[in-house]
Image (cartoon, rainbow, N blue to C red; front, side):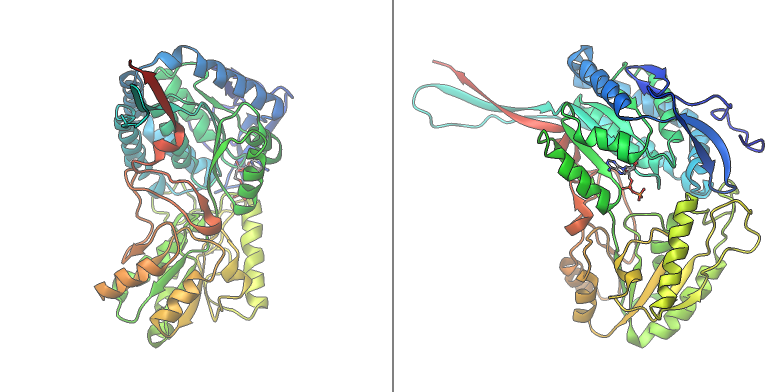
Length: 492
Ligand code: ADP
């Protein structure tokens, strides 16, 4: 256990599972260690949930769904959500720092999550009192009244990755609470702590037992058991495309509905008429933000040939200015990668890049002065990449941007769409006609023009192709936690 970290949640006591309002050991009695990516030190030990724990959690979620929670009025659920938001507002500094220690996102980044979390909870709280059905005229002979109501789908399984759990978990917690569903949340083993602490905060704010259950554990046991569970009505999954496919297959067992937000290899296009003073830092951070561990990161950077060489040089110079270091240092712009496995993966791809004939222009190594046990890699610009190379086709999930030249607008569109994925996309231009034209042609869930990665809870966040389906945020998200029921009444 780390001697150097001081955090009220990291008190040396093993962290447990939250099932039915009780903090309990895993049925197996097993635990796993959580590491601080900035130093490699163990900071906590957590109960390792497995299939039996998932069974218990689903039973608790079902009991809560059918119990007093089902009598809570929209206003009651809204009030609870607003109380949770107020509690997060008070507790955020410790919560944000826990995320930093858990997965290595710099405090400069996690501190921005406060506004985002509060806005998300309060936006969905507003939606809790806005659920409505319709009265529909029918033409059945006689006298019949027909209308629809929206009911909660039931028990939801939330499976989230490690790259930003504080945010990702709210994408299932908020619609669950707004609609009256219940939730079994399985955080990733690499970063389970913020979910456990947030659950404590929610319980203190009045969350009833069993409405939200937290079972950290391995994907192939706890995750797989949740995805296949016959008493789970819906899975909300965020993670890799390979695992997403398994989730969809497992859902067939009881026809549960599924929302899957998966990987990406997002294109970012810089035209020669772009304002480069904005486009260079913008395109760099489109990829390097969160040390590249963002599903919609702009990792394939298409640059028009006339400006390509100068652009690459300036991009490389910009990358060198970024301060990489311990995530708890307020000056740090890029923290470590989240785990040793992720560091090995990124280094593996850098070797592949060189073996494929690409050229590392900037970065590619371990930053000078980086703490020995931490999982650090420099932000890396790779040039002489072609769109068919593995580094341009496979998701690396690290701070590695591949620069690819193009000639015409049509070429840029074709290259951008030549990928299995369809999550994010960006373009930089000062021609407004081109901006609209190209944005319509790029087949992705989101396109950013002269900016990248802007999100807001009230604006939908979706995906296309093998980046998945289902939408987060915006007015449509809670619809996925509701089902429409038609009611017929003979009136005469
Ligand atoms: P990554 O490679 O980024 O860790 P994964 O898709 O493997 O992405 O992980 C995302 C989440 O899915 C994690 O919580 C992980 O434990 C879980 N997971 C992994 N494998 C499975 C599986 N077979 N079934 C259900 N969940 C899984």
